[in-house]
Length: 352
Image (spheres, rainbow, N blue to C red):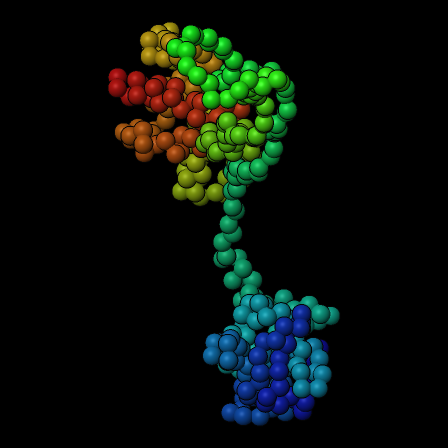
């Protein structure tokens, strides 16, 4: 049963929900039978503006929703999100509106407020989100090798041709006209000394630079294909009692048809397979590879002509959708490897 809090609540008290989150501050305490004040039965309402600085909505909270009062704080039995469901967002018109009471901590389902909340919930829409995984490549730098440059000292014999000069003594005797000498003949005789010179070669070594080696790294851009298995959620509808509206059923079934059409096997492929094989050999056979490796892409591209969502559209328009479906249905074959065959088969099929 509701507790009489009429003599304990006053304007200016802060109001908190059941989880301790502040809702707002009491601006008025009143009874629906009076312009101001409390009813004789102890029932009444708290007018609490909510929102930033009290500029949002206001709620009219009955005393029966109060769980406890601690000092100047009023604690409610309900959460902040339940105020509108309980009908506290509307101003009550009579004292009977107060009777949305709690029994043992639960809201009385027979009260007008709870009936309004139940009707509100029954009209709510629920939404299911379908998710899928996408590949997000990340790069890291790793060392793949190392180049080391080092000098080694080696010895070798070298010969250098050096021109040198040396002196030799020559003797030349010639007769002259006889004439008197100005010196007498000495008992010891006369001696002439002639020094003989020559150039001697010595070797001196000095280091010289004969070559320069420059080493460094440069970035080379390449493209690598990374394969991974991804998952996605698809819609499965179970309608045992046939309660789904026809408009919704049509939308759902057409969506399922779009997601599964690309995985179906085209019955007409065996009849046209040889023609597409000859087409591939004429156009790309000289580039290497095997027909068996590209046949799935050609068969897939040929099958696109049977899907109504692609009819009358250009390749550039449908390529994003086709790429997503191919990646989902053929996770082991990268799109870049299959794109050429799919495009070639699509162009040929649509030109007919």
